[in-house]
Image 1 (cartoon, rainbow, N blue to C red):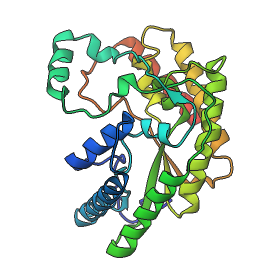
Image 2 (tube, rainbow, N blue to C red):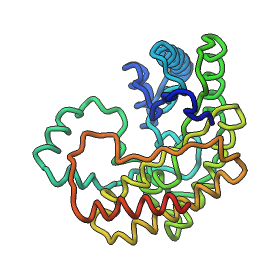
Image 3 (cartoon, rainbow, N blue to C red):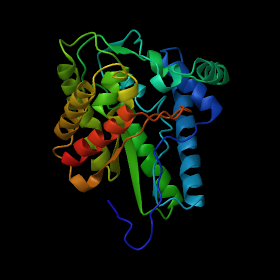
Image 4 (tube, rainbow, N blue to C red):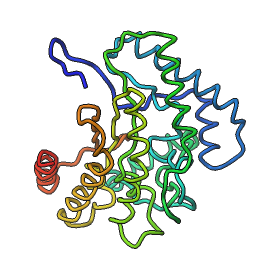
Length: 283
């Protein structure tokens, strides 16, 4: 992983806007509706070529494929792993529920435009294992092909994969006896994706909004120590999944969520920030 030693290197979080037609196809694929697979593959390659060129044109140093092959940053695993089906019922964001009129305004704006409902993602109803590498290999191949064609002057390139924690939090468990067993199974399955991305020559970014965001979703009304315990569990699972990967080939993305939430500052949130920082540094 390159560092900003002579100048500040620029990068981004990972997901870039998909063309409308591709987004619609990925939405249907997410709902297990009929899709022309060949047409979708062509659209993914074209969209990947487009976003790579855009990054090169605007001077991004560390670029990726924009996740053009994926319906969302985590629910796509339902097509690559076994065990998912049905529908979760995930709690909403506390900082939006606190302002009902604001929440209604946002929901009105996005209604009909969102192809994948991340609050009602599939859930774990069976054993989770990585069973189909086809889409993963094609995604890596497409990105490598586009890079070879365009020869952009990127300093480095990366690809993303979700943390076991965000999957466990948003794709709820109805199979494993406890959360720890579910998170461990997810870590073992995600190891395939993590190691493949690095083996193909890309930096591997773990998308872990759960390490901050779940404080105001799953753990919004629960004691802080329960959230810290969840963070401990997820970090241990990530370490398990990346144990064979050189540390300098992994980067971690943590956020509060990708939505227009309200800012709420309380003594509790300040206390959470200090504990979260301490915990991350300790690991």
